[in-house]
Image: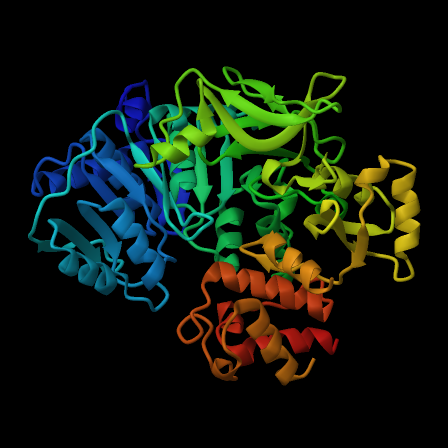
Length: 491
Length: 78
């Protein structure tokens, strides 16, 4: 299959089956086919789109899905962009990806997306077509005349853009195979059957959301998802669909729980399977939901590679990972404790970073993808993840993995959460700082040093244990950069 | 929690300059707080107020700084 449309629609389907629901309504296969036909017609007025990059800033999930399917059918390339981008990051992404065509809502949250995109296109003297609408889905066209951008070749279906850790945008190239892998993960990990209804709480119109929408459509699974993070609306949507399988990040699930209680609704009682993914599942989360009357499981996905592993057991019992079929793994340079970087391989190659063969060559060698995750195989043959390679601390010639120390300290009954970072040390090269959030006020560091002494090698015991009331957060994750800075300043 | 402290929490969590945070300021239109940031802010505020939940009647309760303050303090005084 070389396009998403055929992948979904070239199978026996009941076209009247509802397959996608959002706040805007319920959509059957037939509705989506109709949407695709309308967009195909629109594209025909714009000329051949084969090999063209088409950026979508379209919060309506129905239109986003119909557009992506129409683009794939006509051999164009979908570039989903977040409506949350603002002037600087939007311009840098546009410069990087050079879209031939942009579909955008006029404004989002008071920011005039169209104006910024239009000014960008006017100033760079390249041929660009912009289609904007004011959420009524009537597209107004602006054509900027100029030199033509080159076309893409090959099997590219999607380019996913991230702002990149250095602030320079990074694009990841995806094909149909990537979405098939995500779909395989969903079907196996969530034990999907045909009339299942999944509720997904995650940004819907990015690469991840698109992969879920397309793969659930292909497997005939009804997907319910929200177009925003307005919780009273989300709860109403969830309630009206009675989904039994709930998928979200741990923090969004906590927010869902908080808002449901605040509205006096016990909607989460209908859940029989909770899947949390995308961020660290903390001890605190598992404790808070120790009595939650549904199985809790998780997925491990890699932005570049798709879903690779899932948990078979309830993660409140253990956090061991099972590989998805057709994914192979091995470890790179294992330590004495058998810990090494996890490398993955699937039947089809990683297509790489957009226009950055140098970055691709760093992570993809001889058909193996270097994940940056450190892990080991336990006695049951299951994979345990112990941390990230880039977080590894090198102390006096020894490698120390923060995740290992964090999980030891978090087993202490009076400890809520631990984050370990490395900071420079004149003798050791790096020293280990453990930031500890405690839940017994008179817990002291001496007690924790003794606790470590009995359990881990001397060189792994934190050089300093510092108690912290709250961890600095950035984009829903603990801000390790801020913690390192704090630790260095206090030296 | 006083209104001044409340403003400070909003400034810290949402990274909005303190002088823009006043009673009638709309989170969405004036402070450019999107819905996900709003969720983050509410989760943070309920933790600081020590609330397990709050009595949300409608979206209007979450529209302005003043309405959110009223919602949170109503629960705090219970």
